[in-house]
Length: 59
View (spheres, helix red, strand yellow):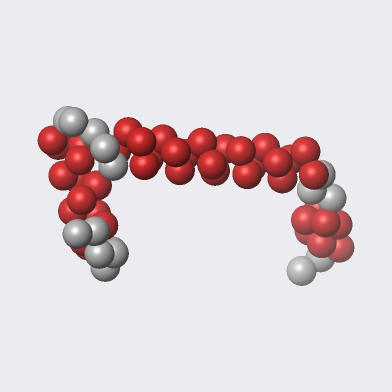
C-alpha cells in the first residue's frame, strides 16, 4: 500500500459519508417498498426466490 492510497481513504468528508448513508437508506426503502410488496407477480417472486437462494427465511 502506498502513501497516496492511505491519505485518500482518510480524507473522506462527513458530507460524503452522509450522502453514502442516504443513498443506501433510499435503496433499502426502495427494495423493501417496491420489490418486497410489489403486486407484480414476476417482481415479487424473483425477490422471494432470491431470499431462498441466499438462505434467508421469509415465511
